View 1 (tube, helix red, strand yellow):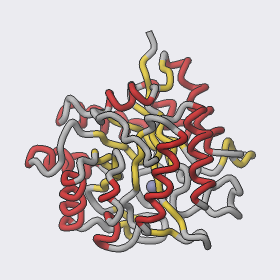
View 2: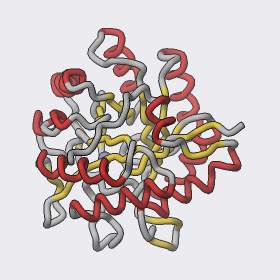
View 3: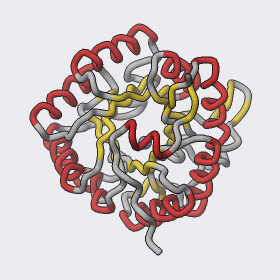
Length: 281
Ligand code: ZN
């Protein structure tokens, strides 16, 4: 019997630009179209940043609203997840779109170095974002850039500031943060299982190790994230022609590990997320 795997597609991010890879979707219609293709290819969770027309990162809730609405129309049941990362604005701006009630939102529970800056997540901001997510019934995806962030998430669940069960994403391969390391990856999983036995998890490999981390996740019973936000190449020599092509790479890897892409309904059940919101008419 095959075990369903939730494939997350991180379609845009805040860094890659059209001139790095023309397939990176920037405009609202490009984002909806790219998500639709990825959904058809097997993705059932979309991670979203929005951009201004000049490609710079945007924190405009209106843009988020239009993208989410279009995605809900074209990809029935897909789980929508907004980024509350450091490029969705500053301070509380980072959660300025949460009132739109996406299904999920990312939540980094600590700070870490990024390639050229500090990704700062002060305790006050983390608590405030978690509180907003609780208020609007949004499930957080814990972004674990190192081990301490897993402990912090578990402690927040115990104190009631995060509603369980936890969903944690292990992020590896960001320059100056945790490299792609199999032993650490296995220790993350073991630690999460020990501290929060009902938690689910996803592996996210950034850059050229994307597919390797996806294979580890398939092998070890987790879920996978792919997409142009994290990696613009299909392999060393080829730019990825689309988000869908990256999703297909994960789908193709499933069989060898006794896995298959989850349907949207299965993904919702696995993450304890209620029924899909109907798009506006
Ligand atoms: Zn992101």
